[in-house]
Image 1: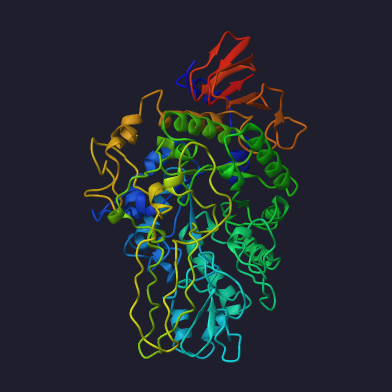
Image 2: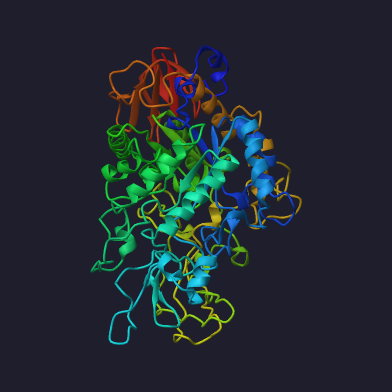
Length: 622
């Protein structure tokens, strides 16, 4: 059977207990919209909020529960909007506040919840607070982490901390002080011991909750609190340690008090508003602390994304993730792609093999207990675009040596900069880095280890207090730009670019072969990836054995049991449901665990045995 015989006959027979209970987030499927690349309403080639609103019916038909929007706030866009200059306003690039309000209302009218990004670890250097700090306004620097330098003349950074981009995490200003930026120099870190910082973000959250949003994805949720005294680490390559070893600038115990306060704030609103931690911690147990009952509702689990196409590795990641979150009564989240990593069709080998594995991995993910995140375009089976011309590249990581001078308010002294240092290319948000396209060949692995920001590079040398022009370094040889390829605007309809993305072109060029991958081209085709996702989400909502941990009668709180299976095959059950994943390059035969209801590739069964195709996943009812 193939996946066209799916959920239609089952939808009326079941109801989802989690949805009825109101804890929608425990088994929600949440769709990430990278606003710039989703839909363009005004013809400037850049996606915007009106464009998103116009395409919400696609998400409703797909069957997701919520949409997560990447930042659309006022920003100089030094880091793709994660450098925020005004947390209460929409950047004109994306529309205005009325557009945001109308989008939320339209989404709610379609039964979709809306989650927005909030960036509390740092602001933009264009934020009024930081401009006041540079201008010497009394007390303004206390909101950030300004320190005197070391050495007789204070010319050395205050400690040995490194930016996630490489080089020192400190930049010196004209009067000799240094400020901390764990990410780009254009993103100064806030000091969360200052009461004005706490009060400001409480106000920002209330602003958007009052507008009607259903929750927040919290950027760098592990980073707001630093160890007392800002102690040295004593070794380099610190970005490689994140998520593996304790560090004085990440995952400090003090962040949990912030999240407890935000949970109280969220709980004071009707409608089950949620907080989602984008957090890195040295262990699954430390990560689980972010989702204790009095803290946030979800924390991203990137280990599944980083897992190779290997059944034992997959099972280990699944077991350890479920064990850690079950211990604190929280759901696990699962994700395969996002705006910072190579799309999983390409990570899994590309071509027909990569697509087959990506389809199978999607069914595996959607069968697991907990919540799942989908990245825009993965429901279309989009591959990474690996042949973008250099002149079209937008990711600052592509030109890693370019470092714009920090603007200074009129009348204020010009800041200097720290010593030049080689940049380390990494994605933003503390998420796993993508493999460079030049390395993206067969094999599923993405390099493990978090990073942040749209690449920064060597800082331009300048003496403190000396005005100077920005310096431009040549493009780094071999640097393919780590994130443009997954951010190419998605195709909606039509035979040629921009495939319905907008009235004109698109900010990144779309491949000519994408006409057959558009939403319109795949709609109604029972063998298409889009219809596979639609069927899977319909079944996931309909069958009581899917969705939240513990749904249905089972002594296992995860509602899941592993069963023996041939080498290369995973087999687990949940109440009334079974899932088989064949990771082998050849077909394998085993006893049929039930009645097939959905498969990523055609399966052959006589009711007693089944022949699973290579690189495939099948769902079963019993």
